[in-house]
Amino acid sequence: MALIEHTAAAVDSVADKGETIGGWIQHHLINGPEWHILPGVNIHLPHFPPLHFLGMRIDLSITNHVVMLWIAGLSLILLFKLSFKKNQMIPRGIGSLLEMLVIFIRDEIGIVNMGEKEGRRFTPLLVTFFFFILLSNLMGLIPLFSTPTSNINVTGALALVTLASTQYFGIREQGLIGYYKNLVPHGVPILLWPLMFVIEIMGILAKHVALTIRLFANMVAGHIVLFAFLGLIIIFKSYYVSPVSVGFGIFVYFLELLVAFIQAYIFTVLSALFIGMSVNPEH
Amino acid sequence: MWSSALAFLAAGIGAGLVSIGAGIGIGRIAASAMDGTARQPEATGAIRTTMIIAAAMIEGVALFGAVICFILASK
Image (tube, rainbow over all chains, first blue to last red; front, top):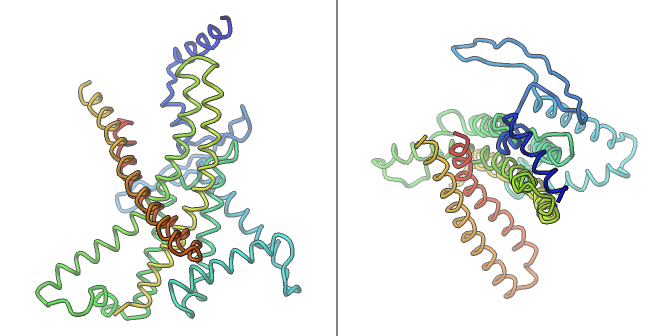
């Protein structure tokens, strides 16, 4: 029929220009110098020449994901600024919803994992982690926005904050030598001590790398599956695949919504656990 | 040409194996969660929370393998 031929002809003409499904998926997920702000409108972002620092090339030009990070940060600051009114003891509206979440993070995540005093002290950090990662994950589900946390550098930076917090606050609590001595459990024979020490150090690094990759891979995998389902229509070159394809796409979209919340919660819980373990060493 | 073909093949087989591992792991968690809830229905809330956290951990490990498959498939 004419409809099938028209679809096939459209797909073939695009394939002639060298575009593939893999390229289409990558183009939507990758960090680029263009900000696709409206359909058909691309803002070209400024490119700064790379700085050379200790033999590394550091490229600080503004890209797509950087703009998304700024939007997430500014929205978060505005959201919390507007819902906190100093002259009211009990917040109303959006403030009450945010207060519920902040109290949940303070009680169920902070105090349970870190103890009463430390839980209250670290609540601002945990609330920032939770809301920033949640907002960044949800931004990928809005059309025309892309996910900052689908970039391994962003999630690596967040895990680096957790690593720096564990080391800094652990050393502050127990002293420089005391912190590293307390990594190895008590009662280990002295001949085994160097091996256990190396294992504990590798364990700390591996746990933080796992934090990075878990968030990054969950975000990227969700988007790739969604784009792959929509790309099935192109691969089969027919309109008849679209009900199935769009149906599965909607299912994966809601799954991604759930995964966005769960991954933000998991990152916060694990950060609280690691910081708690470094500040209150178990004997 | 051979290395590219083998990379694609490895990516496919790897993704399948990773899914098997994740499926088995999360299936066992769900089974234990249902056993626990059947024994003590008033602990449903705590069991559900622990189940979701454990499932996210296992999915994290499965996605390490998936990331390697992405890297292979894009060569």
